[in-house]
Length: 382
Ligand SMILES: Nc1ccn([C@@H]2O[C@H](COP(=O)(O)OP(=O)(O)OP(=O)(O)O)[C@@H](O)[C@H]2O)c(=O)n1
Ligand SMILES: O=P(O)(O)OC[C@@H](O)[C@@H](O)[C@@H](O)CO
Image (cartoon, rainbow, N blue to C red; front, side, top):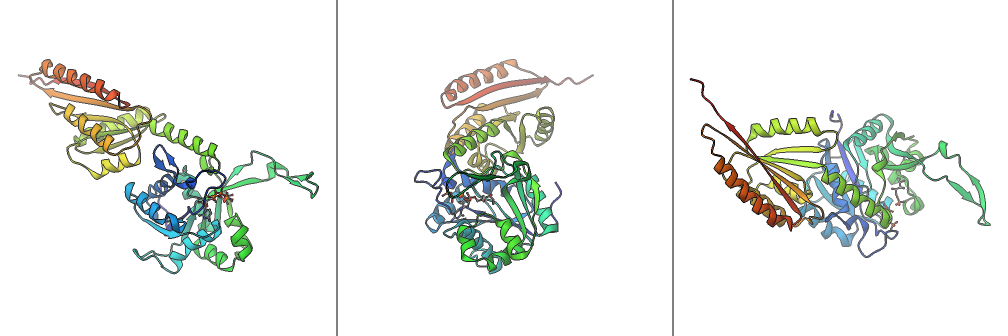
């Protein structure tokens, strides 16, 4: 995907209390597959290389919680900012760090375009972000929209139907939204206290205070906001489903990664997301830790070492140390390549016996291990 030819940053309002969801923990800090909801939105922004800085706005009492999440999940390019009593005030605080460069620990360049995305909307992809940013560059503001599910009606003072709106003419305003920084910052500076305290729509502020008609961009169905308990359950099952369809190929055989990763991706790309990393399990590599700290993949471990079981044991140990709840089977497929002149099936079978024994042990931990021994005899022609 072509990067954007503009300085772009993101503000994620995460300073609410989640009253509609209920419970003591604000919804943005509720765990999904053991990982706080806010961390998914932060990671979604991090995956986009052309987003320079990510500002997460949280209530004062949650600043340390947010900082520990950033540390635990290895989030980068993130600055935590103190929120306000309303969502608009929180967003305004997030924008101020750019305008007034208030951030103590890093120099934050004022972006040309700023993305605003609720931190409780975990499913946001680069595609929609690029669309709203590109549209905001041209129009000054842009926002994702979705068809309405229910019809909008207005009630009279007697509590009876006064009129209804023609549903086809209206849309639901979702996130992400994007703005020329100067447009949205100016709008917030002009904003009345009433708008700051009771408004719910940033696009409206750009129109009201900067005469900027936002471009409306059709969004995907998964842009919805976690608001009620049911949304948390739905988000968790979507995350679980997504994770179970990902494979991480691990090997220190660099050429193998490229070939197997490409072949697997090509053959499975319609159903499975494949990430190939060239890494030695013997090293406690931070990249692998980041993968564990983010999510459990299914792993395809390729090696040509004589005794691969120790390596797979290392992977299981790292998985366990990453204390990710293995709420569903994690699949480890160990592909042992053995290419040599003097094939000795005994080594292969001996290795497979060890793997079978190991697999029985780890199955109790919800980790399913499969071994694949590929032995190629090399012949030298006379
Ligand atoms: N003072 C506030 C209120 C809300 N938000 C954030 O704005 C986003 C969307 O708001 P909403 O879904 O309304 O969150 P809450 O206000 O927490 O929910 P509720 O209204 O149920 O309390 C959330 O990420 C929320 O954390 C914020 O940053 N600061
Ligand atoms: O009113 P809430 O705080 O629940 O939601 C805030 C926004 O997400 C909501 O207003 C969208 O329609 C986008 O503007």
